[in-house]
Image (tube, rainbow, N blue to C red; front, side, top):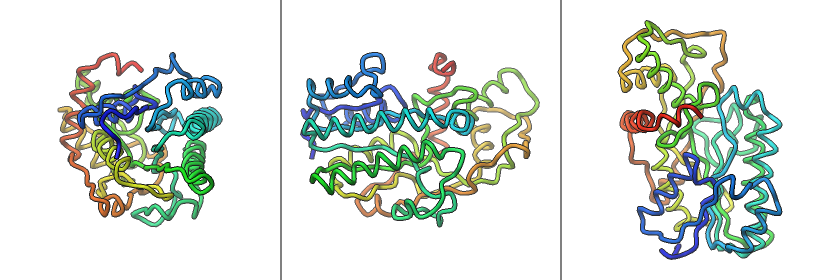
Length: 314
């Protein structure tokens, strides 16, 4: 168990996941949380990361820093996604190990699982088939980070764990028009359509893919819970175990935003993976379940979007 005054480093504290982990830690009474902005510490620079760890010696590390994006961003910058993610995670995990960090938790993504994995996807289906091509670079980087934690555990007896979240959303999300994920992108598009009085909104694909969404503060609670209650080489899935079609999701977002126009579908655009549902029985067996239902979470996200106009410009 982490002591309340233990020195805890949250890497990526300005992102959606990192900021939620900081909120979660503070909510649970942890008082010695250290953070660095990208300007203060570039995690892709090995010398800078090693210097930081040697000086600060954090006892616990939540590695939530990553270069992220949706289909368009991933496809147009495959090399950048692979390099930045691979380098930063290797730097942080290695420096943590060198400096005697008690425990590290690595955050991955459900895109690490094979494109046509049996559904719902269990932790053990990792590396049993081909990855989805559109985010292969990101997935390979995340698999490498997860495996590096596992290999350190095997070779050096460390206690490094990983957690693989499903699609996340919530406060501090990225609402960029082309570089955001599906749910925040829909919030922005329906909001703008409502403000501009547009008759219709066109969405990509045919609306048939099934997706699962987890509110980011629920993930943060799981991250802290696992740091205190789980050790093992296999990753732990983080999700709700519930899914809905993209069509149902768009209708739900339109309802929350208050957009009453028509929703049309551009079937010349890609759908992405047909189905991505995580098997969350492992987390449930450890004693954790999600709290926030999707409609409530979307409402909270929309409030966050409205209250943070600068965020929409990212």
